[in-house]
Length: 321
Image (cartoon, rainbow, N blue to C red; front, side, top):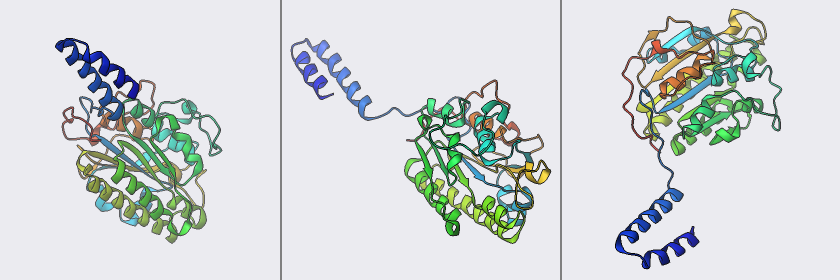
């Protein structure tokens, strides 16, 4: 860049005024583009400029109700009869959550992925968002969940240390700090605590319900970080789960395992509305793209949950950088 400016200055000095002006304009353009990336533009029809997806691992709807989710439900639209996919492992279901398709299409069937293995080729909310110039992020405490976040499409993938005594608070602190500092446009925060409690003590046990209370408190902290960053009014928040559980596992193909909560809050969403249409976990990805004004891939199984929205779409404006 320095060599380019040096040669351009010699060119400018020996040219007529008009040519000097054009050359200087070119130099200014090159220097600006090299230092300052252009802001991404919100697409016509966008309902939000930012999306925060919170996955509460292993959260059963009846468990969330017992843990006190009622006030959050009144702030947005919700389905407490949404369904996950089979197999109901954490990696396959999260891949469906962000890719809009089931395991038979995205290819993730279990939790065996580890670094060095290929990433699925299926488009995700991260890859579509990154190609549109948006910042993307994943915060998780399970190494294999990183299968859903191909690094070439991610601005941040953070594996938060697994410390059982502070499982939720560690995840929330890391994710909240990133929201305040970077204002990501598409972000997934994965709270593992309830799943750990379910496997250790049983689903619907005292310890499990306590872990759900910590998770709900964590959702509140994440929303506070949106306020701190000055983007809450432009943000869509979806709170859901990858699967439920029964006894001390989630492998059985039964309602307690397959039924998950699906709650949507924020920009342009109806308040206190119980969603009537069937909702499946892969509808999450389609709803996110719809909210951002992006086209949902035609071959996706997921469909946007249009029923949850009330307000008119946003006018096209620059994303806040």
